[in-house]
Image (cartoon, rainbow, N blue to C red):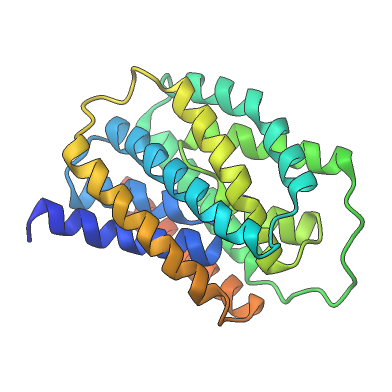
Length: 247
């Protein structure tokens, strides 16, 4: 199968994840770029941030139009993570690739297990600015270290820590992903290796189109079902990356 076809297929799948689940795009993009398209780990990380930034920013508009973005919470979340994301992104280049990959897999697995917990029947919690800022700063730091948008951590945090509804958390996480990815990308400028734009461009285009389809899919699926799909995708990716590290 040609590189172009692989890029289009992978981009469409990652777009569906971002549009429907509000996260998981970078989790899928990095392995796809490395194992399917032959990118080096450094180039794959930078390329995935480019792809996810463009896709999440585009999809954010659709979710905002439907009223599924908590702007105050999302802005606070994103702003709190800017400095940690930048500093961690700059420091990540000095850490061993194996250590970063293992940490990435473990955190993804923990986030998935949290999403598989039974949903609380309690009414939504009142949003506490200090708590939101603390969670946002932690998310920004993890995003910088791992080189991902952070949606796979933002959605659980917005649901379980801040009490947003699942669909509102999905939309709000896209705001957080856009800001965190752009910040991490800025910190990694010049360290991404050889960026193959002939692959990145069609990959990004397919991801954007897939995200719009994912948005429509999300409207037909219950929040609980979205959580379960999201969690199983994370568990599968985490297991694959841990096996790769051990091997």
